[in-house]
Every structure is written in C-alpha cells, then in structure tokens.
Length: 344
Image (cartoon, rainbow, N blue to C red; front, side, top):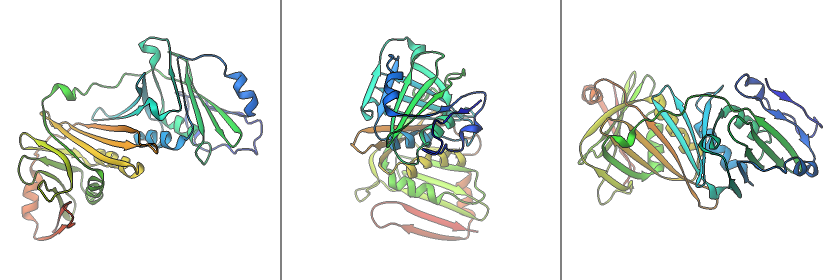
C-alpha cells in the first residue's frame, strides 16, 4: 500500500497517481530539509547514480510505458550503463539503453549478477519522478537483491525521498533475434519514419505490411482501413536523402499489429533529438526498430523494439491496392517519401 508523509504539506503538493499502485510496489514521499538528507544517506550501496536534469531520464522511461496502470520493468545494471526492458504479450519487447556518461555520478560496486538486476513497477517510478512539475536533481540507489529502490529528488531546496519496492517476476523473454539470419537492414533519418507512421493511422486498420526489397520499392509501408488504402514507399537512389545505409539480400514482406507499430512511433514524438533509426528484418520475419537518441550534451543512447510478425497472407494489401478505384500520389520533392493514397 502507498503511504505519504509530508512534513510540510504546503511546500510541495503531492502528485496524484501514486495511490493507484498497490501490492507490487510502495512509494513513500516526505519533505525534509536539504541539510538532514545528506546525513541519512551516508551508507554505501551496490549501485548509485545521480542526474542533475531529470527530464531526459524521465522521458526515456516514459517512452517505454505501454500501460496506464501497472507496467513491470526490468532494470539491468552494468558498468557501461543501464538497460530497461518491458514486454507486451510476448509479441513486443522494448528496451532503453542509457550509457553511464549521461549521469553526473555513476557507481557500481560489489554484488553478484542477481544484485545488479531488479524489477519494479514503471508507473510508480514515473509517478515519483514527476512529483515536481519541473526538472530536478535525482539520485537513485539500490543495495542488492530484494531491497527497495530509493529515489531522492531535489528542487529549489525541497527534497523528496521515495522508496519503491522491487517485485519478483520472470526475466525478459529471449526473442532470439540474432539466432535467425539477418536478411535486410536500413538506417534512415527518423523524421521520414515519423511522417510515415502518422500517415498509417487509418480508421479500421489492424495491421501494417512492411516490404523490404533489393529493388523497387526498396522499402514500403502499407495499411488498409474501412474506406482507404495507404502505401508509402522509401526511394533508394542517388537523389534520395532518406537512407544513410541500405542493405537488402532478398524480398521480404511481413505484417505487424498496428498498435505495436504505434508504440514504436511514440518514442519519435517524445524524443525530439532522435536522429536516425535502424530497421532490421530477420529470416523469421521478426522486426527490430532501434532509435538513436541524443541528450543535451550529444551523448547517444538507444531505444529498441522487437516485434513478432502476424500470421496470414503477407501480400493481402497488394490485392487491395489494385482493387481501389481512385488514387492520389504525392512526393515531397526533396528526395524523401513517396506517398500514395487510394480511396474506395
């Protein structure tokens, strides 16, 4: 159960949302003076880190959030940085890789493998990080297997301490993406992919067909709804500014749930400094999208998605495209997307 104790309730009103988390996690919030906080946290920890601007850290975690209520997240800590992983129905796995250099302090000492991994409710952690309406200093500590994760937030002299209970749960499923032959991959400017995703939001559509080929159309996204069909092609020629790298061994066509694709697109809108995106497709049809994001200092971090394809006719939209009677074509004129919209 969630408990809140404020020594000065008028100093910083407690944000709603933490009361919704029960059983799996406990958050305690209290306002204390900055002088007394340092004395109470003098002990050493297996892991500790500090960031002076919580906005970037909070935004990366919020990109992974797929459920409004409880959302289990596994944190894996290494000398190089932190990997946070969430899953949905064993058909989508999303991970954020945050390098140690984005933190102003980063210490990992002692403990074995189980002490460097913990599972918490991501919604609870985000509620804690958002207690202050603006960016703040955040210190996170963890003292090994079974212990709580502690957060200390400071904003304009007001300090809030949060203890988030770790919970038992399964480790992330191994999707074995690398064990299947990698057939096609492309690295492209994220702004074009963001435009593409926004156009595929068609009423009535349930899936998106993605085609990658060594010749035209090279890479194509297709979706059909109640009364329209949308096809977006990515050119790969001397005039094209879309791809930074394109390598395709053979023609591949697979369909993916539109809801999962939209979750991948969410990170492009929330992370403004997303420069490029890597798209990979293996022999099993599994799709990997990896966004390369930068912080204010130019440090690169990664947000990756693994999506399992749907079963069925992979080329159903090709027949649907031929059946539509009216078509509108668009090219952005700058070596970017080629857009085709067909209406019934």
